[in-house]
Length: 533
Image 1 (cartoon, rainbow, N blue to C red):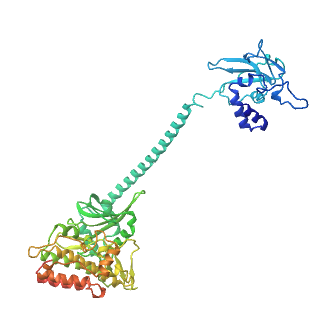
Image 2: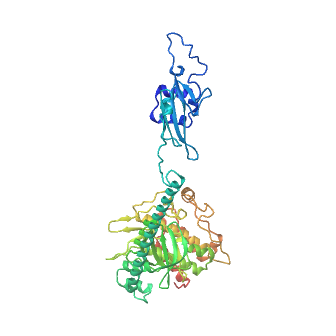
Image 3: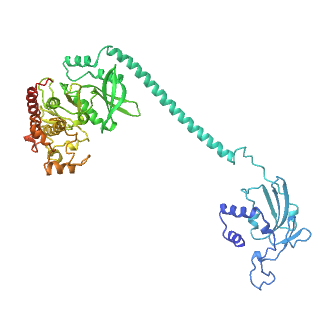
């Protein structure tokens, strides 16, 4: 402690450290007061002539009155020091003022006599440098600083926390009330629009009536947009019936009629836009193309829903149907022929003032073909379709990051030799996929009491989720195709179907049949079986 005070005195600490030093010693000055003021072991009388004596080693020359702070060698309340006399008044733990006095050693006396304003207890010290001068000193306690009931205590901290929490809660409640008000406003406006829409579409009009009216109007591109939006608003969602990479499919009802509602993920807006555009193409409606009803975008500020409303087919997809149902020869031909009719309608260009462009599907598979109640099927999911503009000889390819299903991709797609600027290339790729679908159907056809279980194409050659490399190795490098059963050669219908599918999945695209040729071939087979479609 002696070295500490000496260091402080010699180097003159800054104000902050100055106050820190005085505070440390200010709580109890006894360690400064007791003793002679000279260094332990030093002899002030042994000063060599001509040598300099340090102040702290100087002889005691000042007599002071002491009370409460008297050293051991004090006599008659009198002490001697080489420093200063002092008087101090301080408040004890009971709040009573106590006045004491005594001698202060030289070392640290300058700091001690400058009382710290940051001292925890109330106290005042005064010093003087003449004999018994401290007898006349009358220091007074500093005034009490009223910090109020909360300031400087845990109560104040609790108060600040409470105010902060209340403010946050108030802000949260305000935001909730705002959005609730906004939601109610939107709801009222929606209900008001709904009432107006009810008047716009007369009660008793069915979807078939509306579609027939639009067909007879000459546009051939589906229902008017206002009617579509009206229908979309009035749809009541019942339950989810499917889910895919593009979004979800729900069963909905419009005035009691069942409809399928395809709800696209927001990231699949390009697929929604493309499929809506294709469905609304002039003269697109066909019994073997999924019936389009309406499309709409519903936005609530926080999120956007993309709706595509179509006919509902309760038997589901061809994939689901074949898993649990076997076919006879007539039902096989009926399915194959109706799928060929739908594909032929897509691929065919209809010329005229309001003609239909040729369209290629690009993602044809059993999951994208739906079963109808009458045993026929219809082609769905046109989100990847491409159109051909014969006037400009250009292929209209959608701006879509989606690609087709790898298992059904043609060899030229897998090895990337397909000419993207030649529309016929897309047509031939569709025919390859159609050949695989015929194979799936034929496996489920019962002949002689024998039938194979349902499997996807190449089930025995690649994994359940094959990569491009896996499919390229099987289809392009090894030139393999799905295996067929020996029983197919013993049945006339299956033998003809085997020949048809082999010509559809030929490795060389120009060698494949066209959709029209497939349709005519199957039409002859249907006629020979006396099948009514």
